[in-house]
Image (cartoon, rainbow, N blue to C red):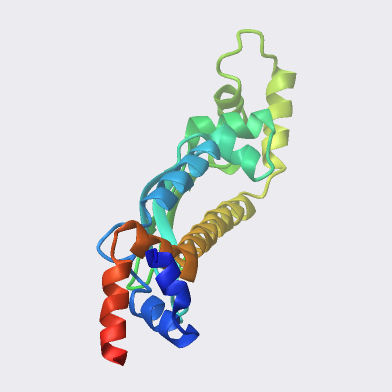
Length: 215
């Protein structure tokens, strides 16, 4: 009989005993989260966020969660990802904004974070300076164009924008935790544990030990 056939010939109780005993075979002694981290970091780069470090604890206990440290490094991509495509706002952000997050505290969920931002608003400049800021590369700008840019930028609530950006980051942190939880559930599932034991030529020996115990 093959190892799998021997396993299938065991009672359900014996099968469960083997699987439960080796439940964490795929998650012990290896950094099983690396693939999740790599995919997440690439996805965040596509939304304009550069992720430096990631943290998590889990799973299924109060206080479990995930967070990351990073910053906005591509404002056009990031603003578009949160629904803002205004050229004036994008240019202001590229020229004068920074937004980053760091881990704080003893836990690793999204609320154990500290956000640091420098998001200048029209109130920080005179209209003339702000107009130059937004349209500095155009040799054909007019006072009317400058006034239009300034009016557009003054239409935004910058405190609200900051809050939206913070919530967007936290949403990504919750997504990171969900991805890790899904991967963990897959790696500790009955199918994955059995497959790993068989692939590592351990199943026969484990069944022999079990049968000796029941002999």
